[in-house]
Image 1 (cartoon, protein in one colour):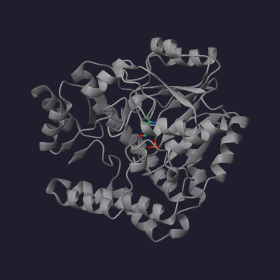
Image 2 (cartoon, protein in one colour; image 1 turned 120 degrees about the vertical axis):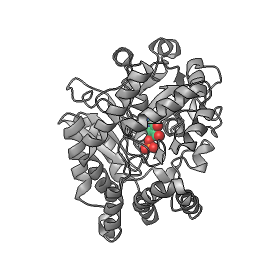
Image 3 (cartoon, protein in one colour; image 1 turned 60 degrees about the vertical axis):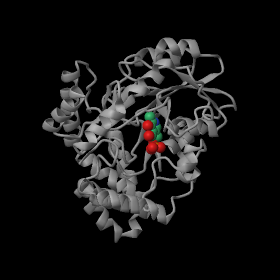
Image 4 (cartoon, rainbow, N blue to C red; image 1 turned 90 degrees about the horizontal axis):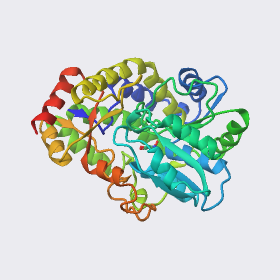
Amino acid sequence: MIFSEFAPNETSRDASLAMKLLFQPWRWRKGKEIHNLKRRLKSRFFTPDTHISLFLTGRAALYQYLSSLHLHPTDEVLVQAFTCEAVILPILELELTPVYVDVNSEDFSMNIQDLKKKYSPRARVLIIQHSFGITPKDRRKLIEFAKFHKLHLIEDVAHGFNQWLFRTKRYTGAVLMSFGRSKLFSSVFGGAIAVRGVRAGKSIQIGERTLPNPSFWMLLQIIFYKINSVIIKSTYSIKIGKIIHFMFKQFDLIIPEVTKEEKKGHFNYSFLRTFPNCAAIFMLEQLNRFNDVSSKRKKASQFFDTKFNINTAHTLGLLRYPVLCDDPNKIRSLALKQNIQLGRWYSQAVAPNELDLELVGYTAGSCPNAESLCKRIINLPTLISIPDAKRMVKILTQS
Ligand SMILES: Cc1ncc(COP(=O)(O)O)c(C=O)c1O
């Protein structure tokens, strides 16, 4: 079975690492790997003077960064529609106001013209999302806009990014990363904020140090996930995996990526925690084989580019490949019959579907392009072989 959404990065190597770790509880919470991970991330993606702060989730990293800016209640945060609750709930929890900006159809990222329309002098922050890991085509203009209006700039690269973008000394924004289980690299849960300059680094580091640790049970859930997900994936097509997945969810052995509380529009404080050492160990393993993973993603992305006649691929390959079609549900069920699970980022302006858009301050019709894309999008997996990519193109063209 091929998965776009469920644990795309987990392999038997991760599972055996988790098995070993299961018997080393003294390494779960604290350890040298946290420091090593920061060093590795910095040397691979950033400049030497970048400060990286790690948290249990990307949403915690965003929450902590926004609170370190000491903004006033009702200050505005400009953010694109075609995003998810993990970005919006921290903004709302800090009593800031999200102002939704429409996106382009080509890159699923913020449209500069609509940004100019939605801007007001109450805006303090601009979040530029690199949807699916595509570098926004208006990125340069968006950054200039932020500079001109003295906005704090956050680039949300939770889905992935061009690895050369943040290695320049002139860069002054903050970079938000996620190491969640469905992202480019997975430690099941994890997130980071990377900022340049000592002052910016210090204020976010205070938050990083003072947060509570995740519970022991949560650490166990993280370690178990690395084992369970591999068992589930390898037995899913013969139905056993499906049953195990259901059972694990019932017994709370798998924490949902979006909790019930979040679906009701509430920020979940159990995700606002420190980054545990066991997650750093998993991340280091993911980084060790990152070149192979990205080259596979890149090949599939390039293949889809040629088939669909578009140009999205970049240095890391896309996390998922977005395709527009008339009937996403029909294509999803056709693919499922061939043991391929397609993704659905994003099926409404602020995902997931269960979320009441009014609760997150989104007014229906305010970002028509994002709404239209949400109705037509499906995501193809990219961590696949070219013959599998060909099968996917066949499903799409035959439907
Ligand atoms: C665009 C985007 N930004 C940020 C996040 C936050 O990541 P996390 O799940 O680690 O909180 C997500 C999560 O799905 C996301 O899709």
